[in-house]
Amino acid sequence: MSNVYTVTQVNTYIKNLFVRDYNLGNIYVKGEVSNCKYHTSGHIYFTLKDITGQIACVMFAGQRSGLKFTLKEGQSVIALGAVNVYERDGKYQLYAKEIIEEGLGLLYQKYEQLKEQLEKEGLFSREHKKEIPAYPVSVGIVTARTGAAIQDIINIAKRRNPYVQLYLYPAQVQGEGAAETIVAGIKALEKRKVDTIIVGRGGGSIEDLWAFNEEIVARAIYQCSIPVISAVGHETDVTIADFAADLRAPTPSAAAELAVPDVRGVLYEMDKARNALNRNMEIKVSLCRKEIESLTLKLEHLSPIYQIRQKRQLLVDLDQTLNQLLHNKIIKKRHMLELYIEKLEGLSPVKKLNKGYALVANEQGRIVNSIKKTAPGEKLRISVTDGDILAEVTQLTEVNRPEG
Image (cartoon, rainbow, N blue to C red; front, side):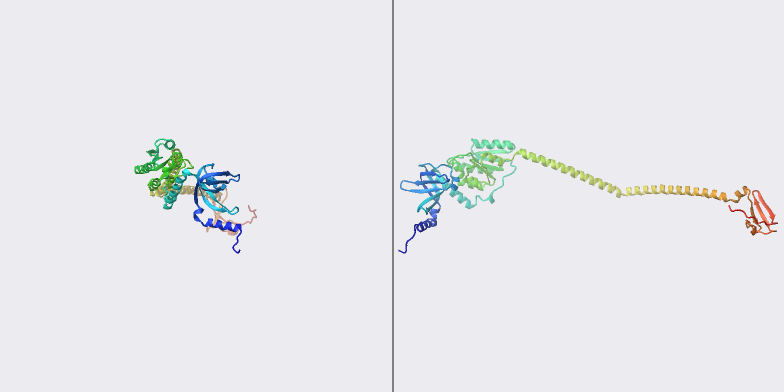
């Protein structure tokens, strides 16, 4: 009895068989809901059954965010998940990741397959997305002629910028042949060469929106040379057209806001730019004027006429200065001359003679101002005011007079 295994070993071995089976790792299972229980932990436990069999299922709380309806007894659904073994009980069950109602299953599967195919071809690549024009002149709209979608787009576009021209291609957006009319609308507006195209409609079920999941619509959007904004359904609705478009808007109203800029904001920015331009121009003109004035002044200073005028003025100034200096010099010299004349007059012998003094000189003309310079018998000439007196020295008498 060498080949004896524990229950746990057997359950683990069986579990590994399930894990290695690729088909069981991602499988769609269709059936009727039975024994459905919403646990307080958030997990959902239920059974899927058909006429001849049943399988236990569980959807953990972390997967419930994608469940858009409440499971009910007897409801036909398709569950996507992995079949695995719960080792403790030795039972296999389906671990559901996604649950959809059976009627939507085939459409959803077709949607996923086409989405995966087009994504591999690069139709959804960001590098192929075109920029939406910031200031369009014309906007084309592919949607139904009647309905809330077109009214919302028109109202918002006219409110934001009434100067933008809107072109409507009235397309069939639901039912047989809808995809073909949408494609025709895209091509017609592309031929008209509008700046932006909005493709969309209001909300609805997956069947109502299916025209926007068709391959021909996705390829027409991708191949269009004009930027396309998709606006299909409500914010939670996502179609193939949304992935192929250059920009997705959650609603038709949002598409109008994305396609048409608010002219009030544009005008405000234009006013700001105009005011800034005027200020800059005024500053530039003022600076240029000051520079011209400075250059003009410099040119005047360097001109020959100005230089001659300056030199002439300098000569005039120097002449006046020289004349003034000469005048001052003459006055000063004249004053000094007057002083010298007075001084000379004070020292003049004639003046002395008029005061009673006499000038004594010997025969040789030498002044005799001391008894030592003459001798008895020598003839002297005594000059007085009105003439000369000839005299002879007869006696010399020395007298001590005080110096004064």
